[in-house]
Figure 1: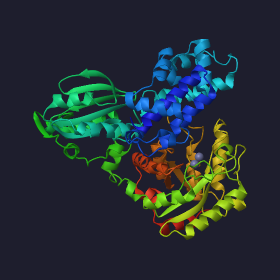
Figure 2: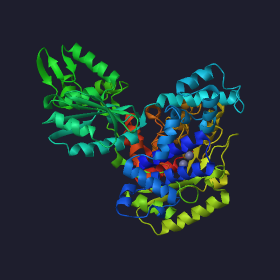
Figure 3: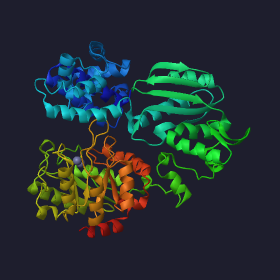
Figure 4: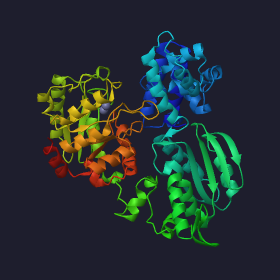
Length: 572
Ligand SMILES: [Zn+2]
Ligand SMILES: [Zn+2]
């Protein structure tokens, strides 16, 4: 079991216990454990193998150490199985609805027999929730909003989770007898922020042997179907995976076909028809003759197209680009020169300034910004004016001993509910880099939130807006904001907009990134890291930027230090 999987089990346990109304301290212990394990770099399974004591970990006592050992050994926990038997499995979906939470979900389950997201939607529609004790019309409205996000996400997992599965699955398949090629296709290959199922394509000498081996992957919950060239399984992670064994000469056509998107493939079929050709998962055909299929480049070439990168295959802009200005040379992870949003132990980060600096150096960055929270974020121990000035002195001292890496004195300043920023201008003016963000008042009207953000952009001290829509994929919908006005203001004021690379945020999303590009607003891809490991999220942000069609030129933190410094000087 990976650390992520172990952490997910503890989260689920905590959710179900909270749903049951168990002791809050016990629930908190499981949640803390989930966070500790999720943030660990070393695999827990290895710890156990090497005989290390799990109780060395913060927040892990006898009970949890024993549960982790059971989990790694058996893949599940008796307590979890008990709880799961007690409630219908669909109640776990309810717990993911922002604005509901386990306690309220339990009330709805008891009082209105709400068991599924569909039940919840029906109860909202009939306005049966607002009359319950402790609820009310406002709560009902918030549940409706949260429900939308949860429904969209149902039965999909985040890209980074799919990525981990794919990597495990590839490792597993690598030892299958007679396996030759192995490529994931589908929405995973296109880098979509969520993935509904996995499609794996292989070529093999002995298809049967590979399919049998595939079914023995330890992440498999049950086998759904098995034919002569295809096997389908349901994974523990909750999604399905299909394995297809395809003929060598059709591999490119199959990869193209199963990568999609559906809309992209519809256009290709039309183009084939216009040329008197036929395209399917086996190849491109003129009459009976196969003229392409072995590789994707050949498939696209047969339709007079350049090879289109999977991230662009959404039938949005790729065909226009191919026919006109050409496909963009998409940004790559190697283009990134710095990370401009991260937290330290000065607020809710897990690593010190020095540790984050060392981690940035080992990633070869030319510059970083330390951007801890401002005072409004009390739960994170946000910094007041005096503390942030002290932190910047400390950063100056740390920077004096460092060469090759420029450390910007920054802050993530809250955009207050009533408008305005959480720290005085004379303090902010002393920063090298200021990201402004909305954490509170997310339920305000579109006009209010848009106004708050626009005013922040107009403040000369502000460099960029962080996680501009506030969404958490599958958990919390974006707040109401007029992005067009925000982007136009950013363009006018010469400010940047953040693409937050955290895999749950990926905020701005791909289409908003494309809009920023059209308006000439530079995007800054930042990790918002709260730990050293958090810095690795950069690649998720880069993937989203690629889906938005961004090149290195469109992204601010690909610039060299001297170019970037010029941008800083031009803020107005
Ligand atoms: Zn934030
Ligand atoms: Zn942050």
